[in-house]
Image (tube, rainbow, N blue to C red):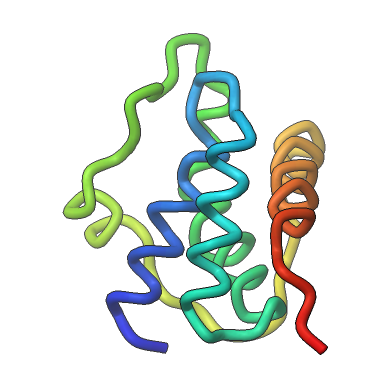
Length: 113
């Protein structure tokens, strides 16, 4: 996967971990990034769960977490490509919260024939 595509997915998915209310705008944006990436849903899901989730879920546990987003350079320095199918491992509340975000995102994807 191209580094630019991966970074755009990291940026879009990182919104799921902000200490703010996540709106439909975020889900629509993430869906549009997934569609434009040209990768499969399974690959996009693996990026979310294997690359973004392990690093950013801790923000969901924080009383005063990040709410304005993470700079690209921070994401590049702290998130790392992985291989393999999506692994949903971590605190159950965080897994459930991010799973709801993923499902909302899927609802905005255009079905392909």
